[in-house]
Image 1 (cartoon, rainbow, N blue to C red):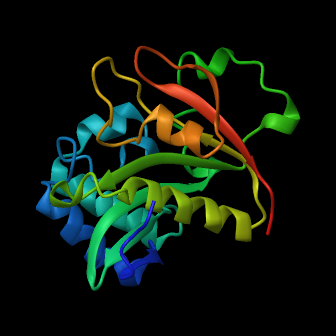
Image 2 (image 1 turned 180 degrees about the horizontal axis):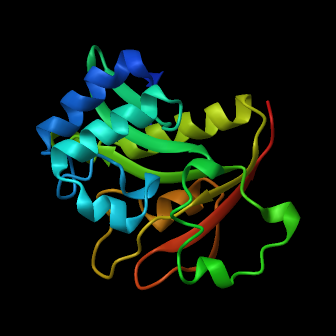
Length: 195
C-alpha cells in the first residue's frame, strides 16, 4: 500500500502532547471520552474519572514515563495514533478473566503490547492504521524486538473496528491468532526480531 509522502511519525512525549490532545479533543476524547486511558488503569479507576480527568490522568502518566505510543502526522497535523509499549504498562490485559487462565510459557511472555489504533474520522480508509502499526513494529524492532501481543476486536458485520484495528490487518502483518478473550477481543501474537 502506498502512503502519502508527507506522513511522518513522532513518539508520544510531553512535546507532542498538544498534538495528541488536539486529535483526541476533536473526537471528544474518543470512545465516550476515554482519552486512551482504559488500558492504563483499573476499570474502577476509569469509571470514577470524568472525561477531563481521564485526559489529565493520561498526561500525568506521560510526564511520569508511564504512557507510550506514537502519533502519525500529515504535515504538521496528527491524523492517527497507536498506543503501544512495554507490556508492563498495560496490566489491564493481565486482569482479563480469560487471559488469567492462560498457561503462557516463559518464552511467550510478552515484551510489548499494542492496545489501540485510532484514525481521525476524516482520514479513514487511507491505510493510516496499517501505517501506524508498521511504525510501532519498527520501533519495537529497533528497541530489541521480542514477543508482541495485540488485542483487536472481531465484531460480526464490522470490517474495521474503530479503536483496535482488525484481526485481518494483524494477520497480514504476520500476527498469529492465539484465542478469544471474551466476546469480541482476540489475543494475537508476533515475535519481532531485533534490528
